[in-house]
Length: 242
Image 1 (tube, rainbow, N blue to C red):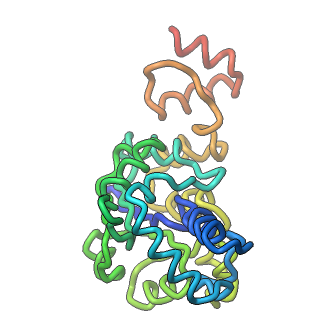
Image 2 (image 1 turned 30 degrees about the vertical axis):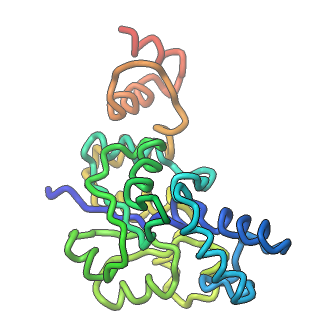
Image 3 (image 1 turned 180 degrees about the vertical axis):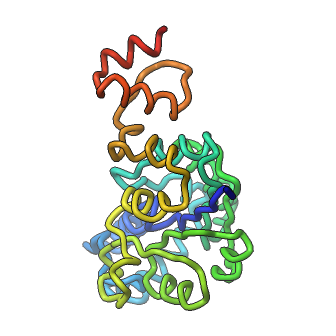
């Protein structure tokens, strides 16, 4: 079986770009904009404010490395799956280099800090997203920009829309909208994986994120021990020291 290729957009999916951009704009102009934008084009901002915000992003050399991640994002699970070679992963972004900084390097550092050290690639730039994902051989892609997901699907890319406040007006078949990154993994990515991998990472959901035992065993072995000890943490700890 061919190893599936899974791709993720970064901002709005893994990294909370809107929170920091909104904070920058509010600090500069004394405004009270919310990070939960009503649409992707940020029409809740005055045009002068949003334009200035994007300029200020480029003036901060370390901006991309300072973003928060979204709470509940299963970085450990994704990282374990990448480490075990369950799928080949790429993160793509249209980020631009800030003055005196490198967007690609900061993105890679940010992802590494969250455990995604075994990504096949981190691709930053203003490429045609459909062409890029097709060249990468993406079997499934997760994005937060509604119009982009619609375009990708129209051009033959198996893209899914992550539910965010700014894409609620996107008219898309509900089967291509997911409520969380975990749902994307469990409902979409799992269908490309061997049965053993599905059992390892989705029995029960998020088990590889919820259990932390200090031992050198790989994630698949950890999950097997958890299942076979009937999810008794003490039994897992004993087995890990055997």
